[in-house]
Image (tube, rainbow, N blue to C red):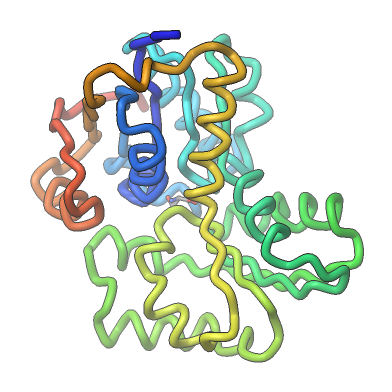
Length: 270
Ligand code: DGL
């Protein structure tokens, strides 16, 4: 097995780098291409139709780089667009499945109380709630949209007082009410410290990134698409649709130690 084609990863902005990082750790030899649609972030306040159009544009761009599969490292696009994207020729996986699997792995009890936070679109789609009820019908699910978290992360403000105030406003009602909290937006793991302090240490934070990386590995192995693990270290190409300077600063901070090769500013359509 030695399929050198890259794995494509996209998000509306830089949040999907939390997923890319886990893929990199698990599959260091794979070549990766990341697209951050920084010109059009946030997706979370857009309509379903717009989110689907953006997601299709992103896949088209990644497919033009001959990717062997695409990881939709964006909960909003996964929640709304995944069924449409699966019709694509290129194999696609999202992040909702990984998030639900990770939450249920942690909590075996039938009456598990699960909190879910995400963008407005992700919460309105009910993607997490439906998936959780399907697998664990007795569980209690409490959801909350936290739209201001995304610009705070894109700005790199992960530990400012304003971020703590916003977290308190959004999350105080979860205290004592949930056993685990699904971070249903790939930007949110960057705020783990603040979120955990706000909801309390006893609430387990669930991040879909690791589980999604496991799903990528399983998919590549199952379909004979893996790049040989004896081969050289993979290369990570990094594309954005706006403002490369700030994106590179934030991404270097997020990825600490993982080298991205800035590969260009792209225009992927209206
Ligand atoms: N990081 C994305 C998500 O996981 C989207 C944030 C946004 O664009 O609103 O939902």
